[in-house]
Length: 235
Image 1 (spheres, rainbow, N blue to C red):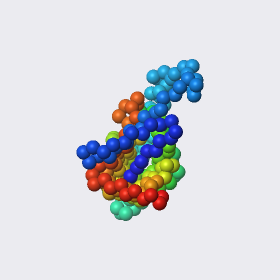
Image 2: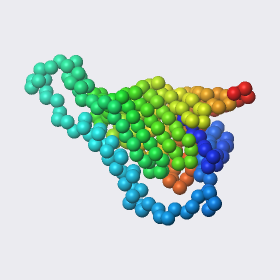
Image 3: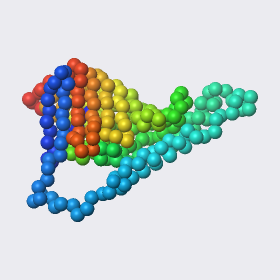
Image 4: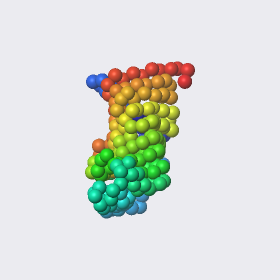
């Protein structure tokens, strides 16, 4: 359900192999005439803190729901099951916002209308009306919107499966029934059918994955399963 789009300082190479359509984005090297050498670089400690601290803040936010005392038993508090569910639902945070950096060095931010505990699963919170923004180092912005998602604390995984859509600044607009996102790393997988519009036509695939294996490597975009690219010269 997603594409990454290059800018003027990125090199994109694409290919088709074994029913897999893939693109690799690598940053275009800078010359001395285009950019001066930096005087100093961040220490490994500073780089690590830029990743760990935002994730720790998100963990503390989620923990507000998960470390509360267990609800009294029926004999202690004679409420109906419906009433208990209402009490759980009242524990929520409105307009939460998270911003941080992945292990691959890409910026990621997440905003929502509200988050609340998932009464059906432990260590899980429900996230409503999601707006996710990813800013890769060498590409234009990637935006994901969804009606509902679940953040699983132990897996550090956001699963969105309602009205999921991905839009890019380069003219791509695709949808998927289910998308998985890792907030601590640059990784996103859209389960099919993945369908949408491209700048010069339409496309569909069984699955799409966007990831960066190492911080020094380029961003990978891989499509798998029944890939169809329909070119429209009129676009």
